[in-house]
Length: 204
Image (cartoon, rainbow, N blue to C red):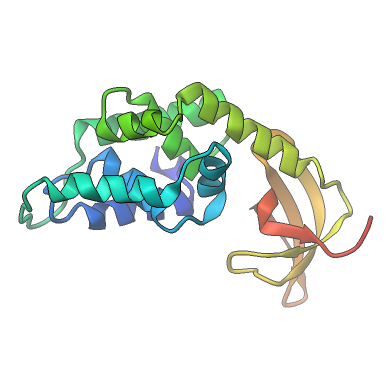
């Protein structure tokens, strides 16, 4: 199961664990907080397009935490039932969308689909439902990836290959995924990227 989670999704879960240290257990609101805290990436973009004020949402989560007493925890942190459910639901959401890997946007879908958790309640308060979030993810993926086609020359904007040039080999609009052939030390390496991680360098 863990193999299906992307590096970004795993980093978010690890960051949520750090945020939860003084609360004794890792909850879905810790996961939601780390997703919206920095305001970067595809998931934050989706929420902003849906009208969510990320700073206000993050502030509300922190206000909730101030009302809870700190709890000292030694050793490995446990996941709360709602956190476990959110992770399970994120796997289900990725499968329903036909996506091979669980990304941060699927974690958001998992959170809102938990229903009764505080994190899901906050998302609903900001107008985010499972259906509206799923629709927004699909629209952004298809809308972004459709601008690419095989042979397009691009530049990578994020990640370990940042600023490397490449050529589009394949795109999967439904997943918002673009496969780029990148020359690395004299060898061409295929790299799977999200559509927003690359930009055209010249007209095709």
